[in-house]
Length: 80
Image (cartoon, rainbow, N blue to C red; front, top):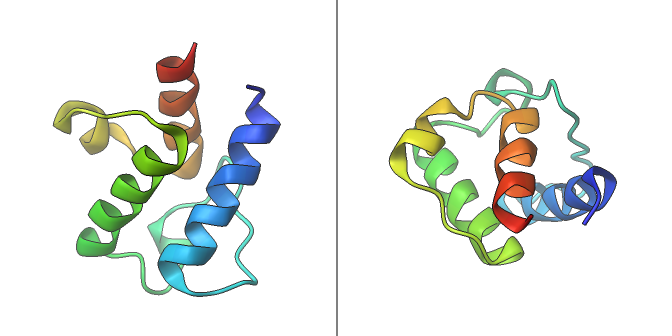
């Protein structure tokens, strides 16, 4: 899976979790860029990412995810 394919999947997850079809994420997207992205939604988001890509993250990995690029990197590491 390419990084581009991961971002296609992440865009789909973000749109579903935040119920906003206009969201398009990139490497630098953070919680500050998406209005409803708080700590609770972060957990919902991670669960949705895990389901979408068939991976599981540990709490250390989740705590290091500060931007969408970090999430994409973690997905790519898991699916290799």
